[in-house]
Amino acid sequence: MKTKHNPISIFILDVSNSSAEDMGDKLTVYLDEMVKWITIWTKNHGQVKVKHRAGDEIIFVSNGYSTAYIIAFYVSRFWKYRNHKPYFGLSFGDIDRELDEVDIETWIHPLIKQARYANDLLKQEQNRLPFKFELDQFYLGDRNIPVLYNQFRYEFETLFNTILQLQHTLIKEQTYIQELVCSFYLILQQQKAVGELLGKTAPTISSHFKKGKSEEVLRTFHELINVLNSLQKNSFQGIAGNPMETAERLHDSIRSHLMDNINLLLIN
Image (cartoon, rainbow, N blue to C red; front, side, top):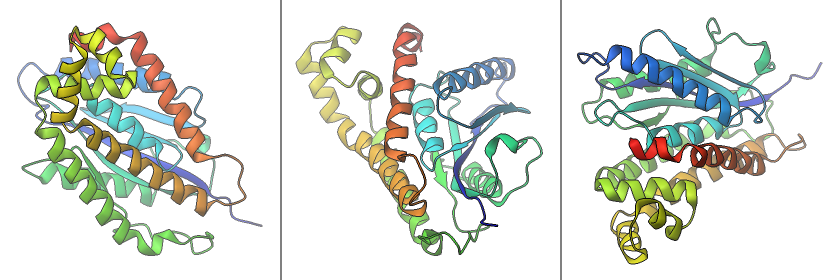
């Protein structure tokens, strides 16, 4: 009997400085809200598991190599508590069952271990990055997959994390208004619309967009997604579904929901 292979991705989210005084209850409520938002974003995305676990952790598992990173990036851009930012341990690969059959509370799998390990590595960093992929330590993959990208997993991990480090450097250098322009452009896709939302002129928005290196930040986001989708497509040739189209539908779903809640994001 032929082994089933389902492409998935995972993140484990933790929150920086979550033990600060008076933040515990606020973060608990906010993480529950974030789980609800992610559930709305992914309601038409296929099989998804997302749960706020004990303390300040969210675990997310979904079909598609790029899904976890897409969700994590949007969450990071519109996170409410600037002094208590989230960080994400990420992994992707394939499993030999349907995701609907999995109980993420009790599931033990190398991909979960990888995401957990990436999260733990971030936790130990003084200058913590928001994202880290871990592809090397635990998961050897399945030699029956047509394209054995996993034999180059160390090289992919190094490239992904180097790009994410450069992306973080650009984001850290953004001023608050440059950060807003970049984030709202991610939703609205037009500088004119961003200007109308923020009450700024077109030249002002253009200046903030350029000085904040928004184009470069968002290019790293989209190119990482393209690579993950390409890996999935080439690893699962002959299987129905186009990961690029699926990812674009997810972007549309997220943007639509965020636009419906734009006033809440402006309060942040």
